[in-house]
Amino acid sequence: MAIPVVEPERYAEQLAAKRDYLESTFAPFQPPVLEVFESPPGYYRQRCEFRIWHEENDLFYAMFEVDPENPKNKRVIRLDQYAVASERINQLMPQLREACLASDELRRKLFQVEFLTTLSGEALVTLIYHRPLGDEWEREARTLEAELGIMIIGRSRKQRIVLTRDHVWERLEVDGRTLHYQQVENSFTQPNAHICQKMLSWAREVTAKQQDEGAKKDLVELYCGNGNFTIALAENFRRVLATEISRTSVASANVNLEANGVANAQIGRMSAEEFSQALKGEKAGRRVAEMGLDDYDFSTVLVDPPRAGLDEQSCEQLSEYAQIVYISCNPATLAENLTILTNTHRIERFALFDQFPFTDHCECGVLLTRRDV
Image 1: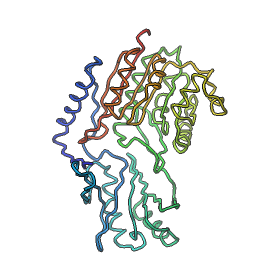
Image 2: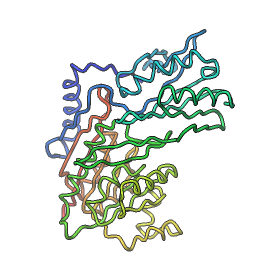
Image 3: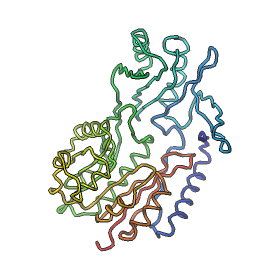
Image 4: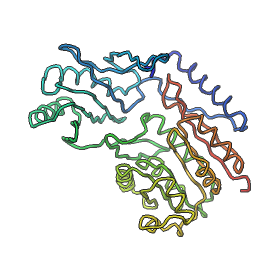
């Protein structure tokens, strides 16, 4: 991978290149004007992980640059600061390194460090080792927690020591509301909180216009994670049924529903494929019965799939809904899916969310409406 080089003075140029790429790629679908949501050009990632590289009496944060002509060749890149990481992470990087250099117990066989931070400056740091961790490590790690004002988790093979707690609380400002999200260590969360706020606001806007206040219908959400969209969109619908396969994410989503006072949403632990089978009556069992599918009247489906996108069967399933909100982290698979979805739906809104400035990554949002609606 190439390590992003942050050049704030060139941000407008790189964002324009992404816009041009998307407009060219999706031109065959004749979408409306692309809406572009920019990010801060630097210090935008709230979570990062680094390898720890040991050289004699020194250690430092490292990433690896792969030779594209020979992927087996990797060059170690030393990082004392990381301009794409949040300001809180950059503040902690030298402080944590110095503490480890001063303590044989904290540095010995330290292999990797993972940072999880919030817009308010809360920080959870996971230290990963190639050795068992004992009481002395815990004593020194607790002292370090207090000195740096952070929370620490220690990991090694078959071992996980949580000193304070295993999560942070992110607060996102969306359309004049403060939304609270428990974000758990080692589980997926949106890395760019600034863009996440804009993405949630966009999703609220495009779904709010799809139905009259007095005749709200229901939303079904696939790949809901920790309830990121679920919580923001719940008030636009009569009821929300969201599904997710990860136990950790489902537990966190339920905590987040309660923290935000959302009473009209339900989280079901089920894969998107299993849920499609349940909707067609091809899957039964306790988890399906608990969903009470017969009580819903779905008008809208929201999908935020992994980079592989959706398979043909899932696309055909989506085509049955009046509105589709598709959040994509991979324009290539989004384009493939749209070749199927646009047989029944037209593109009403099209957005670029610049989740990762100075990389080739493009996050897209598409609203599709069924042609016979």
